[in-house]
Image (tube, one colour):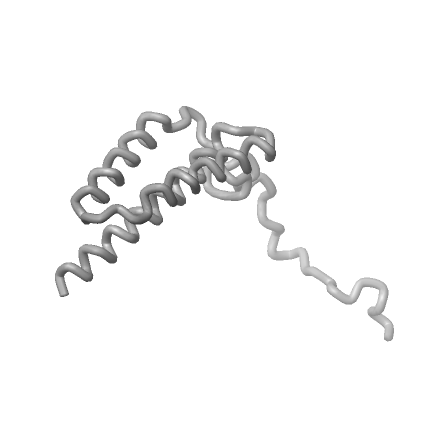
Length: 110
């Protein structure tokens, strides 16, 4: 049972590393064509190491990947504009409570 739990924990760790590496690539590349090429390169690196025979060797590969990703962290990462820290986060203040929305504009009398 413990082997299964360790394998599942390792699988989650690999998935997180893959996801974070894709997100990191979005911070470095601007052109979509470059982004898609790098996505393919990242995917091929993960698929090349998919059938590692031992869990210890796989763990060493993941640790090396995490170290490499930490070294290549972008100094000004991309943030989705409407997320916290993004350029549009809380840009428009909320409407005052006195203002009401009329969704039936132009059909009030019908």
